[in-house]
Amino acid sequence: MIELSKIQSPEDIRQLTLDECDMLADDIRTKIIQTVSVNGGHLASNLGIVEITMALHRVFHAPEDKLVFDVGHQAYTHKLLTGRYTSFDTLRTYGGISGFPRHNESEYDCFEAGHASTALSAALGFARARDALNQKHHVVAVVGDGALTGGMCYEALNDCGNTRTRMIVILNDNEMSIAENVGALSRYLSKLRSTTGWIVTKKQVKHRLQNMPLLGKPLYNLIHGMKEMIKSIVVDDGFFDALGFRYLGPINGNDLGEVERMLTLAKEMDEPVLIHCLTKKGYGYKSAEQKPEVFHGTPPFLIESGKSANSSGKSNGAIANEELIALANEDKRIRVITAAMPLGTGTAAFAKAHPQQYDDVGIAEEHAVTLCAGMACGGLKPFFFVYSTFLQRGYDQALHDVCIQNLPVVFMIDRAGISNEDGQSHQGLFDMAFLRHIPGMTLIAPADEQELRLAIRAAYELNAPCAIRYPKSAIALPENQAVSSFAVGKWQTLMEGTDATILSVGSMTAAAMRVAAQLNENGVSVRVINASTIKPLDTACLDKLFAENRPVFTLEEHVLAGGFGSAVLEYAAAQNVQPHITPLGVADVFVQHGDHQHLLEDVALDDNTLAKRILQAVTRGESANG
Image: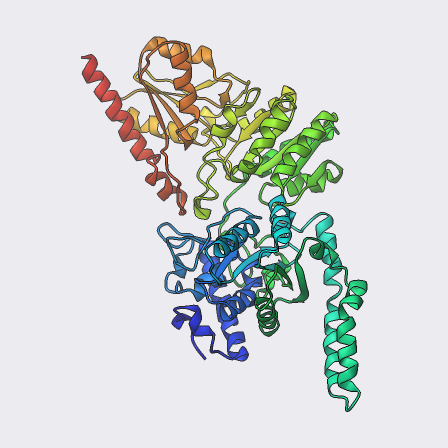
């Protein structure tokens, strides 16, 4: 029996017996549970796919053969089998290995993905490249059933089936995406799951007939020849067949031997093949099996109880839904929509309070945005709760379907700003840039919990497109500096000062207050203005600041290109003035993964660096003026 710590490459597991592999699978699950309990991460999906990943590496030969994982968060076993055991304890930590496939970590990571429904298109691209270059390797896409609620999957399936491009699709069917799967496709897969008995019966009949003397073998051959006709009656697998795929399954995806046999069969087929594997999300860890949604993406937890190891406090999503629950009590036109993220966005509470005013559309952000547009056209008041990183997928729909028609859709943008351990694919650093320039869009970034509640009420009354962006965790400003009122396009002075002004946006307002206090101790008097409306700007406030001709610093947890600072500079240029404006934000980089404080330091937005930069700028200005 080989120890998990000794595995340097997939070659090390190819000579093991199935019994040895079963023991290794237990060790893999133990290692994943131990690591995620300390670092946080995606647990349930990784526990469910252990055997499938082992089978893939035993049957295929990566990196020559291409293994493409969708979403990418289910690749922990893949990492452990491809030489990353010694670094696995650093998973998702600052400077450690990523929670997703990364080229710079391993040659075995052929495609980087942090969003769902991409693997089929990417794998088809790999297959087309192989064929164009007269190569012979295999291409396998590993796709969860939840990802199939995303439209890209069907575009890729249709394209692949139409051209009969040789590739293999593993459908990892655990009845979950992040939350419980919803929609017609989920019901279709449930129907296929119910036919597992057909496969078991077929095996029993084959065994008995082949062991019957004289007549057994001829009878088996006759029945085997009729099996496709029989199966088409008993098992409705026509959906994938109509798309041009050879459908195999469903099989037990947690049975290594069964998965290997099916992969070996698919490997010999010169056509698109889809293998339907039934797995259990959270397999091998009772707490994750019982609550797979809770353990989809989990903070550190206690293994014995499954309870969170520390409390992160109240989330802004929970606060926003509290406010909308109260609003929905008054107005039945309010509708809350999410895309497979009821726990992450806090909308599960709204769903419980107002189930008839709630929609979970699955992993289908583009559809969600246009659905909201249709609802608004029909007289409803839709609020779409979505992570900043996932709203990127709905940009065209926001522009074309919502804003061109000036519809009262409110985008509740969660995880705005640096999103820590999930890394570059999940950083919410681009939403202001891709929304601010759309005509008719109002863009708000509340500074604290109270202003978030007020902004929701204002958006409800606006009767036009509006986006409200906020970080995961609620922020409470000191009581004597808390935001007491809110009006679209009107900023508030939270701290007076005479030497310079910080125009802070959203999550950075609390930081601005701390930095101003630090600078005051160094003899620099700094005014802090809460610029919570990014569009429209408070031009009256800006005109006064420009007239003062003192240094102005814009502060945002967002990329500088196209962000709030850019908006202020654009206004200054339009007014033909040249004030001392210094934008402070994230430079032209993709921010990696790690804890929030380290990442703030990396992008020069930590308190000490901000105070130093402002002090130097103000001092230089005084010297020049003197």
